[in-house]
Length: 440
Figure (spheres, rainbow, N blue to C red):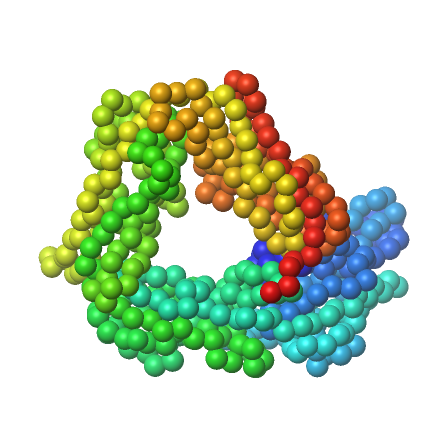
């Protein structure tokens, strides 16, 4: 089971979802069910066992196959049981969702209670399917960042992270956030998201993450200090620090960093107002891509980029302005695509960041540039490894490869990066080998 599949599962565990075909037809239409199998979230249909983690709810679906080949999710019609509910409880739409009065988990939702093993069984008509669920405790449960320094008037997003069998990732979806001792005159925290709002100088306050209904000691005292200070200054930095030029048709990430009165820093890239002295040549993108600049036209002189952060009540605001950052857009012709690393190991359930570099025919000082966001990524076997790609729009996560938690050790998969505009070499590959994660 991958962390990404856990996150997807967290969002829909309180309702019974559909898989493949609707479970509304089939029976009584002269078409008979012929077999059933269990499908664990993020796993393989018919698997003998699956992993789960204390207090991180997951689910199992009952897939029924009919005589005409049709298949459907019949989880909501099955009767579920657990051989050891002290380790894993399973819902028959009768287990209440903590903190949500009148709401119950859907059938087939698993609630891992403690480390141990239990057999989960689903019965439908004359069919019975079982799977062994092995529960272990998450390790290294922590809040990221470990210490939050927030500018007055700014937001800061906390994340709950854990290691699951050596793979690290966010487990935010079930977390509830609070301050151990609240002080709304200094900062507030959103209980569902962990987003902190800096109100006035003060702190430290202690932010706490908990999972409703969870009594496991591993989640009993997960805290991080939060302090709020005024913003003293703002500075812009470039993604490609070795050059002052940007090739036309490509993007670059601009980071806005605030220095606070207490000497700490905060990334304010998502909260400042960016400007360009010539938006016809270089422009900032919008939405979640707002700190990416796109070079659309060559310019003989540098384009000055700027940013401001404004806070305070209407009529009494304070604005902090960053010194401008010059970038010169230059023309070039893409000739070759390369990928790094050329070969690498990737753990089951793990991720790996791949990078694509373009070689250009250009007058630019440095005729190569990262074009990870400007190639199409693909995997030769998506059952082993998937990879984020750019599909019509720029994807800031392009090139991130994710191995299946059930990927077999020793298997290899080829990842390809391609750009049809290249004149001599339009694509390049990276070969990934599934290997267990290295011991810490």
